[in-house]
Length: 217
Image 1: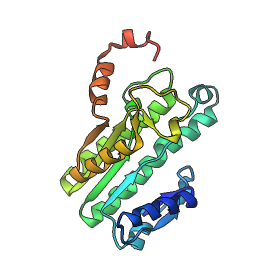
Image 2: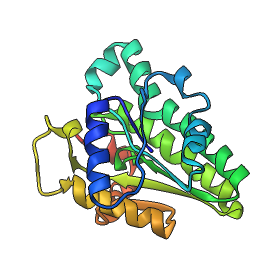
Image 3: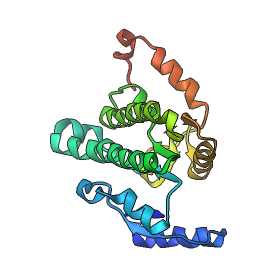
Image 4: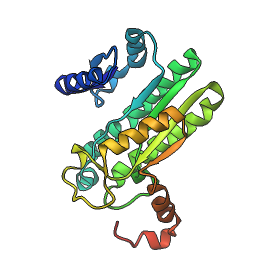
């Protein structure tokens, strides 16, 4: 079951999946910013599919940090999209899988959520909230055969980062997608994509706040 805003793009991906051998692909229009429309979404699609084994929540925006800083309404809108809506869908999936007796919930967070930086602290705060929530959800559901996979990508070459100057740390969407699929199959807990970000962020977290606050990042 593929859900997104653009039916045209959904149809293109569905066609590709069928070409690769998927016997049945359904699509549905989904607007992440319309929180009220999310009510009962997981149960609805589970009914259409005859059951769900795994849910991947993978969407977000990369807002202009200065706009969020100067305009609280934009900050609230972006935080709702990048955190609140994701948390709500994760809770829906968790409730569904508890009733089902097992499943996999995979949620894309970001390495940006590990430390607040002046360049993107609104986005980082939203992703930090997602990471902390999924950690708690994983703790709650670990004894119930439900895996909660927190995915923390670094820079990924997608339309969301089209305006960002590319550097050697960027990964392709294809390689990140494969890493996500592998992590879901393996039912991992926290996955940095690519893996070298685990070491980069360990260094970033280790910098004392007295020094970090003076750095331009």
